[in-house]
Image (cartoon, rainbow, N blue to C red; front, top):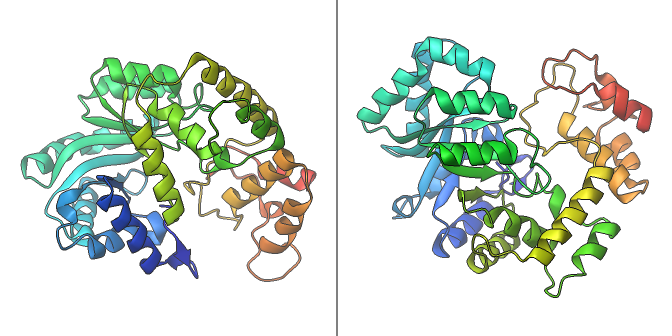
Length: 348
């Protein structure tokens, strides 16, 4: 979902280069979804994973939980995805962004029976779900079915949010394979506020903030695979280097104290828990919610006026075309838990 883009579309040449490099250097798992990159992610992967590359990777994609209205939709989406990916079988098929409420609805529609039948037919190998609800809902979903795998957001800032550490350990004890998304919290942990940089510099080994964040996730023995959204060849090379050098339970006590100190700073400066995943879009009022939150966080974290300027120009508040600034929010609550007006408009 974070492939390099050009003019709003996947930059096929750059994306192909970084994916081939990743696979040639040991990456063997690719995560996508029906609506990533405006619906073109799966088609692009199907296009380039030819000439033996499909056999070198496991593919994970997802059925859109919010878009399924009846049992027939399930077959329609799966067959479309198989066609777009140009494969006879999807290795990991997840229910996308599952919550307690959506699970109850989808279960009544027969989604579990559908997934089991698809598994018997050889269209999918493993059944799982991705998750952004709270840990109580997570435990209920874990207990409700013998899932093969789950995908949760987890990083050193998110130990108590969503499934969190408690959910991670609960799923592990239930025998579920655990995949992690958001190890850098949508890139936030790759940023370097001055106070954070000062703490990382106390280590005897010099690492980038992204390295520190990835190492923390990999350090957990419960985790099987980390989904890191890499948008450049440089990021691919860095991630491969970190994973080759890091083993579970390998971080020293001294370094763990550094993580705790850095976490305190981020929690003090980070105003909105947003990873720019885009799941809140499109906004019915036209607000670019992820970009608003990003600029809002940057304003606080770096204490400069650049985000205010970008807010006015990039989001179109001073133009008549393509306006997407927070002032357009009417507080409907349909796509976001946050009321933009209360934060963004007042702050900027």
